[in-house]
Image 1 (cartoon, rainbow, N blue to C red):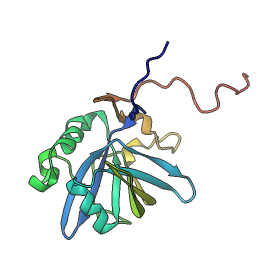
Image 2 (image 1 turned 90 degrees about the vertical axis):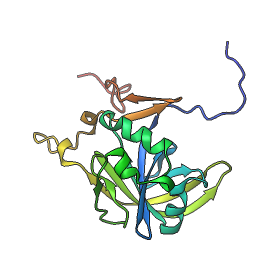
Image 3 (image 1 turned 180 degrees about the vertical axis):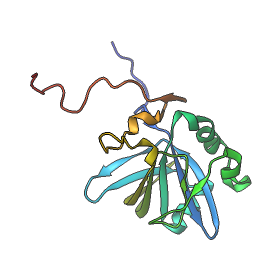
Image 4 (image 1 turned 90 degrees about the horizontal axis):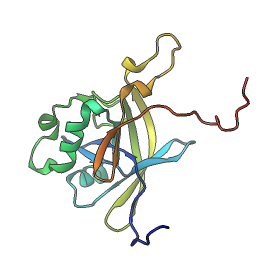
Length: 187
């Protein structure tokens, strides 16, 4: 039997990501979990941010941001950037994270992130408590530390990616299958 609950957003786990943004010489970080892929060609993603957040205005004015995936080693900094306001101080300094120069956008990436996705906002959808920034991916910065020297492939699984589920952070678990394994013929 299942219980009936009021409508709610219980799609978990989600990536715990840091969004870096900048405008008029001021850069900031904001933690988001409401993010995801929305299109392959052109590559597009979204983030949802409350309009009262300090970073909201920076993103709306610059119309760009960088989505930085986080790791278990970054969990304290990721949490901190979600609970303190950039209006009150420098989150880069407070978190101990370092800026990496943007390539396709003017805002910095997070140097410690295994993947930083530089984005340009195409539209903003006011949806209620949050507004959705729909953005085109302009460039991806991949940390060379995760390159498999034997295969030449990027091995993001080694990063220990961070996820968020119902108020808690988790490190990515063990691989239990690959896409299409359920129909693949056995050799």
